[in-house]
Length: 300
Image 1 (cartoon, one colour):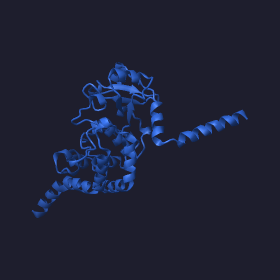
Image 2 (cartoon, one colour):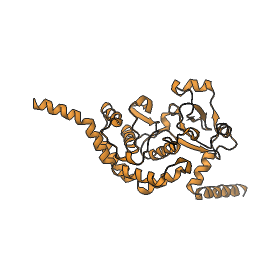
Image 3 (cartoon, helix red, strand yellow):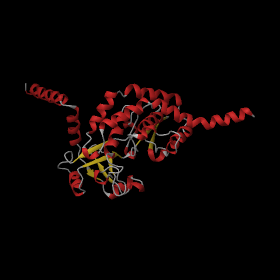
Image 4 (cartoon, helix red, strand yellow):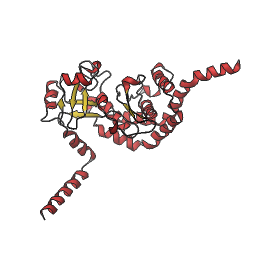
């Protein structure tokens, strides 16, 4: 009888938890994390020199995250510039959430002072005069078994980058981490900053210099253009207006972010709708020079 009562209580607790709103459950999960700070000695063993000034923390599962600061200020609200960097923390988290059904991307978490209560992280935030921080999973910390195998992963990431206007991915050794599992390569994208633009940039010229890295990447890595087109169709079908709205709703944009969520929603929907045309424009730019060379050779 005693065991029966315990089982009933456990089941009742599970029902209560599952009946809570998604946002409430997300906050509870975040608040359960406990972080410890890595020592300088530990950081020097794992991090390249350009990240040595970052603050590294480890959660209870052993996952390592970075809080960028001291010249790498993309992830702390204290350091965001109202002219251009406001809302970057939320953009980072939004990019991660949008990637979940499309490609492997580094995990991003937003932590406010309530989530960090009674932890060393809360003390650190108080000393830094921060009420909210963003942390990103340290890419070199991933293990192949943690990543979902997705066929054509490079094409999947390209689709996400083009949709979100994340146009600085030319250097694969910096913007991506590649694992080899047998004969298969698993790619992890971990650079999200300066993306998800809104407004006039939605109609930017794909022949401009900012897209040359994408063009070069397609050429160098022999991207399957048919798969790229299929993935553009997938995004248009899978990421409905309702789904995008729900994902934006998970972010919890506040007044300090200075981001109009309606404009953001409309911007993402607009670029989703024209994604196929955008990819065709990039492919035309990629292979137009080759066509000209072929035409010249034939004419002679």
